[in-house]
Each structure stands twice: as structure tokens, then as C-alpha cells.
Image (cartoon, rainbow, N blue to C red; front, side, top):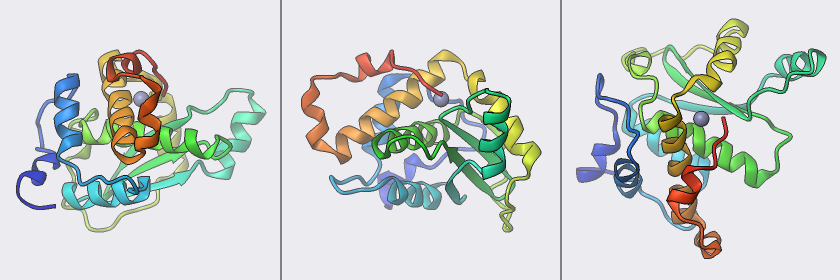
Length: 183
Ligand SMILES: [Zn+2]
């Protein structure tokens, strides 16, 4: 977690990462083993970035609202809130899918896809996001540029390949996964 691994920490103001080679470098600098969980990875990224990452299902009110208006929530969203980054995910997804959704959002975070909004690293008091901020994050979820979606997806794929070697026998390549996009 020290030395060269520190490079996985964001440089404030640095450009978003979108190139596959750069995503591969970021993932190679993480401390991953076959048993690393997404929670452990989030804890590691929290330490590297000096900003907590909190992962939780969408609040019940959001799930109820999305059912009421028959508009499914994105599988996952990243909400950079003062003091902490939140990742919300759809809890009805299968555990494997949930893990992929969360890794994808961690990819957006690690690749700095919302540059300056994450620059409040000095804030000590993480506040729970309010309804309006979650609604904004949901609205924005489809708004990442396609190359950023591809980078987040490649991040998820590469972390899965490092942490679940049994899955790498499928013959999939990062380039193939690059085309499999989801929020
Ligand atoms: Zn995405």
C-alpha cells in the first residue's frame, strides 16, 4: 500500500482516465488477491484517495419511487458527496451482478470520471446524501462519455480477473468487455 502503489491515488485536477492501458496500470497498482472482496477494494481505495467510499443499496424510498413511475433505477450510481463517495446499487441484482456493478462504479471513481467534484478531500464530516443529491446522481448516471463507460467496465473486468481467477477461463478479453456497457 505504499511506494509505487500510492500512484493509484487521484491527483486533484488530473485528467480522467479513459485509455485501456492506463486502466490496466491503475489496476496493477492495487493490492489485489484471489480473495479480495469489493468491500476490501473500496477500503483500499478510500485509504489511497483519503476519502471514504460508502457502498449501499438504493434507499427504499428510491426503489419505491422507481416502481411507482415504472422507471428502473440505474444498476449503480456514484455520488461524490462532501466528505465521502457513495456508491448505490440495485439490491435485487444477483450477488455476482452486484459485485460487477459496484466494481464498475469503483472504476469510475478510480479513473476520476467526475474530476473536480471529488476534490473536497479535506472535509472531515461525511454527511449522508439527501434525496435530491441521489436523484441528481441517478439522472446523471447515463451521462458519462462512452470512453469513460468503457474504462469503468474494463476496470471491473480487470479487477474480477485478478480477484476471481476462476472466471478468467471464459476467454473474454478486456477489449471484448470494453464493448459490454452498463451504468
Ligand atoms: Zn458507468
